[in-house]
Amino acid sequence: MTAPTHSAPAVAAAPVEIVRFAALGDSVTEGVGAPVGSGWRGWPALLAPALAADPAQVLHHNLAVSGARTADLVNRQLPAALAMRPHLVAVVAGGNDTLRADFDIARTAADLDTVLRELAAVGAVLLTACLPDPGLMLRLPGPLARPLARRMAAVNTVVHELSRRYRAIHLHLAELPWLRDRPLLSADRLHPSPSGHLLIAREFHARLAATGHPVGPPPAAVLAPPAPGRWADLWWLATRGTAWVARRSIDLLPGLLALAATETVQQLRGRGPELDARAEAAAQAAAQAAVQAAAQAAARAVAAGAGPGDETRAV
Image (cartoon, rainbow, N blue to C red; front, side, top):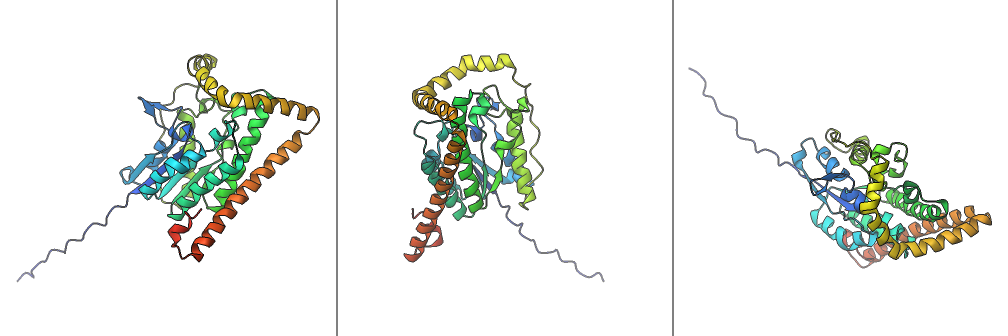
């Protein structure tokens, strides 16, 4: 007699966890320079499918907006990112702060600290990057370029310090070969081309993999147009660049010309290194002040009996 057979009990499939990825920032993170249809397909969109073995398991929201300053991240993008309960968040910003007459490194540092602190408090893995010098990218003359370079260096100093504090996965974006490899830049010389966006996505992917985060295969190659030539640069300046310069002239140019005049006088007096040292000291002080303010707020929240999730919002 044949022994009866019994079918094995059905085992419920384990629920597939969706990887939630948010990107905060300005035009670089929005994807400017990599057009697709009527929009952009920048490095966050290229990185997102590579964050899991199955791209369908990744939920990606790009909250970045062209022209955004760090205050815009705090007031608009951060609440939307927190509502997602993200696993990974990219925060790349600060460049537009340097291009404004009211630039204040202490305020920029406080804004970045708020964003990174609140995202770290919900357990998100943070991706940060330091940005290249806009004066160098645009090949501005020295008296105009040097003040902008100091501002960008100050922001990058703050980003480095906060990245260490919040254990972010940091990409030295400023050190990528933007000027040596012209195809990495779009015609405006400020934003990555499709190839440049792909490079950023692959660099972040490599750093995630190297630190043990589960990821899928590297971001796939994209169809990249030929590198912009001189005529493309001139066409951009004539059709779009002029409007960009005009918008900035209302705000930045008068102050920048004053900075350039001061720069020229100080350089003639041999005090350029002193200006560099002062800017670096101000950036370090701003980063430390932001960190100390966060620590004091956390201590006050604990003393008042607030929960861990409330400590980060006590400032």
